[in-house]
Amino acid sequence: MVNAPQPAKASDGLSVSNLGVAYGKRTVLNAMSLAPLPRGSVTSIVGPNGAGKSTFLRAIAGLVKASGTITLGGIDLQTLPAQKRAERIGFMPQSVPARVGLSVLEATIGAFKAIDSVDLTLRAEAVAVATLEGLGILPLALEAFDTLSGGQKQLASLAQAIVRRPDILLLDEPTSALDLHHQLQVVTAVRRVASSGTIVLMTLHDLTFAARWSDRIAVLGGGRVYRDGVPAQVLTSETLARVYGVSARIEPCSQGFLQVITDADL
Image 1: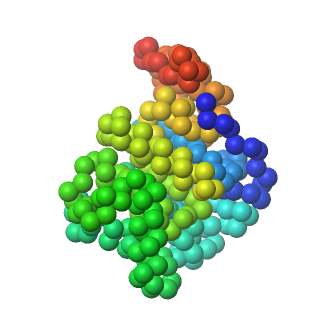
Image 2: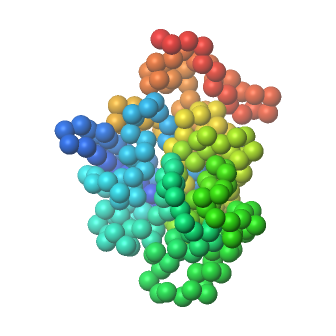
């Protein structure tokens, strides 16, 4: 099991309090709060379709208007200018644009220079190359983004999200539609990024996968956090019945990792 992070002081890491998002008259997130997420931790945001998982990440990134407070190291991100907020946050959406007329290296350099206030091309190239090398995809540097496989695109997109060494990394379904090999590549890279002190939040549908690779899981239901804590505390038959409406068992595998086995609808 992934080691649980040490408890954080209120002034450390990332905290979310009374976060609210509405699209017109429809409330998506309603007074949503999370206890502090320490640096170096990986938290999975899970829940049924329509629970607000993607909206939650977009609210932290500043891509949708939100009420409440989002603090990093005691600084309210909601009060920062958009540029300063973007410097602290890396965001990887569920899917990349259909047409990207750049090589992997060019796209990564572009992501770096979009935030860097000083246009130092040589520095941007060096940082981009180092990022691709760290993810094990430097051989793809000169490949056209459009020609990559699904798994390669996910890793290349991850490179764009982390090239600026953000304090917070937000990943929306980073392993969706990937085969087992590429799922493992992506999540291993994510854990490596977290080990450098980045706070990682990722939305996932696969609860067994979330339990295996996360320090912490937050289950969303009805626009709020229903349960939040280490996987063994959060993933229970009662939680899955209440939030997902299924009868399920949570059992350890031969190596002690949790498995979620669904039996029937309720």
